[in-house]
Length: 140
Length: 408
Image (cartoon, rainbow over all chains, first blue to last red; front, side):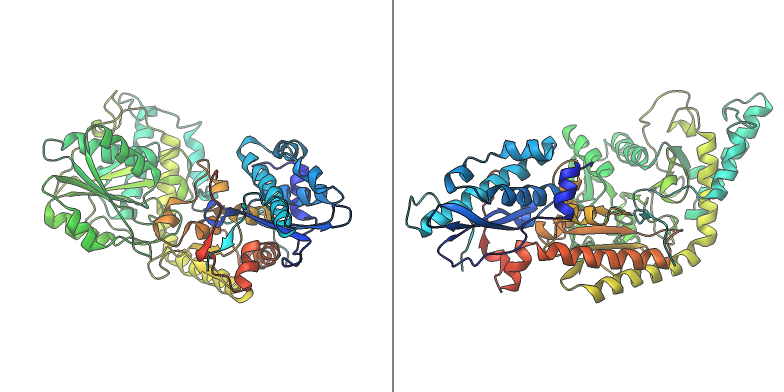
């Protein structure tokens, strides 16, 4: 399969790989996907409580090159956005930016899910709008 | 010493044509271009002579009689001819076929088609090591069973099935036994009489011959196997496969078979040492890597490894100067992870993380070292960005996690 140059660039030089302290009240964590499906994304945002702006974003992804690129791009876009602006990021924006082929659209969907899950987690911690908690949790 | 890139370690997919094979083929494109079925002039006689020589060379490689070799367009056709041909011919005797879940699609999909036509097919499971259980096989046999079709060596995990034992059971029960021997013939000793095989599919391009030519061994004596043809026409190949013979391809196939016979022992020795070197080097550099399938009953040039917590396609992207295959869903047309690896019961996540290495006649130590070192670097890098690796290192048991799977 031929990858777009942007996918290759994100794969080779992923932005913002890493983890933020998940117990920090200002950090929201989203963990979406499943190992048996071949894609798992962890995306974290750190929100400045005073301004509501995302100061930092990190990701870790198990998945194909397009999944890695989608989450890498998402963290780039998240930084500097307000929580509400972040929720406006659509998977189709990612598809366009990375020129993802149809078989890879699910990677962008997963990245959008990860953003929403991370922000939902942040809001839950802040005691605001306890939206449905979509991210995975250890059952044990 | 520097290696020439890209490196080809996908010899199960196809092999380059040996230059000695090309030399043998060349005159048959131009000087000796006759139709082997032309009985009344020297052009035809030359072509026929060349085909008969090749038939003997192929037969010799598998311990068969030349008359038992039916040339086809490749092993997919051979599998179709064996299974559909026998099903149609022996339909009055019974309607039950036994095969196995890790067979090549050429066998599985042929069986599925027969199911639509009223045949009953048992797909035997495999054990953890990738082999069928002989007890399962015995239990599956009924008085309606007309055919057992189980491959000699698997194309993904290189696992060798107990062909001789299956052959003995089939013989004892009076059931025909077909084996897709594409990956085994020319690589490991394969004798149709010792193994009690009634039909065997072979392909030239998997053994340093050209693409587009294969053969089906069809036993002529004890028992005499009869097959209904798939293709009707001029009655070539004893009526089992009509169509003008691919003389150049067949000549190349014959030469390739001759070379395999001569060089099998030395190739096996060299390649199994290289394969073990690759395996050891990978194990030295990385933890949590798992070999898929039996190491004991395995082709000498195959290695199939799952690199836990890393997805196969991203792994291939990181080693883009190395040609290998992955069982990952993302690398397959069906977007499903390898059904062969799933059948081993190791879990889909390990299927997504697998790489198949196929070594061959021109693989070198330098190449193997390069690949092992590069993979070690890439796997380490990808694990650093894998949330699964992070969770595992934190002590989370990934199998007890509840994952959000809807919509994927």
